[in-house]
Image (cartoon, rainbow, N blue to C red; front, side):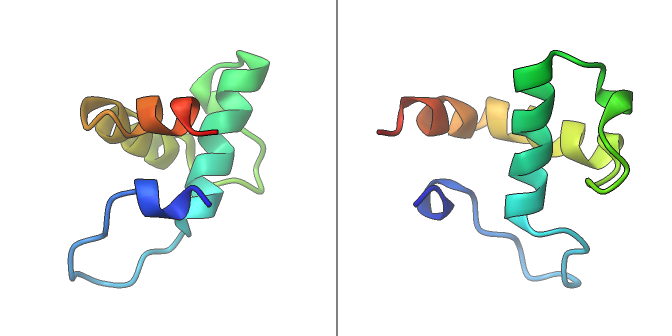
Length: 69
């Protein structure tokens, strides 16, 4: 349901992590208030998750996700 709100990836090499895995990492950090570097090991690298979070915030995608009903 949230996928239409996420940006379309440019035509480059296939991503290592799915958008769902990235979003799960972002939501985990926001819910738990932990440091980015403390994300569980089964999630993408914290630097990757933070990069997407920063990009999505700049494009107001996180705002759209939070407002979505």
